Length: 243
Image (tube, rainbow, N blue to C red; front, top):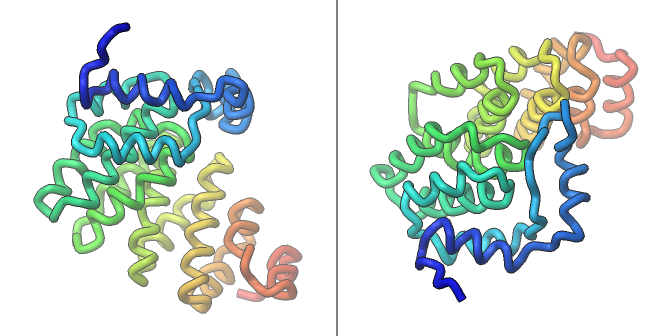
C-alpha cells in the first residue's frame, strides 16, 4: 500500500476520503446549487460532515501555506473547507504578528472561498477579526466593489466581527450600498447582518429599516426583521411603517 507523506495536503485528502459518504454527495450538489448556470456551478462534493472536517483540521493545524495552497486549489469543496478550518485555527492561536500572515494568505486566495458556506465560516473570523482594531478598513469596501458575488458576500459577512463588538457603521454602510444588488445571496447576507445588529441594538436596526425598507429587496427585509415582534414584522411587510 502506498505510503502517504505525513502532514501534507495529500494526507489530508486521504483522511477526508475515508470520511466521505458518496451516497450523500448528490444531495450536497443540489443544496449548494452546482448545476450549470447556478452560483456553485462545477463545485464537487464528497459529503464529509463538518465534525469530521474540523477533526481533520485540528490534526493538521501545522500544515504549511504551500500545502494549504494545494488544498485550496482543489476542485473538491471539502478540501477547500478543511484548508479554511486550518487557517482559522492558525489565526486563533497566533498573536497579532502571527495573525497577519494568515490574513494576507487568506486574502491572496479568495478565489477558493467560492460558496456561501465557505464565506460564512471564515470571512468574519479572519478578515473581520483582524480589522477590529484597524482604522483603515478599506479592504472590505474594495471587496464590496468588485462585482464578484463571493467577494461581495465576504465584505458583508466580515462585518459580523464588528457587530459583535458593537461597531455597526461599516455594516450599515455596506447594507445600504447593497440594496440595489441583483443577487439574493447578497440580500440574505445583508439582512442577516442587520438582524445581528438588531439583536444587540434594536433602535439602530429599526432606524435604518424605517429609512430604507421600502426600497429593500424583499429577501433582505425578511431576513432583517425575522426576530421582530409579529405585529411589527407584519407592518414592515405591509409597508405600514412610516420613516
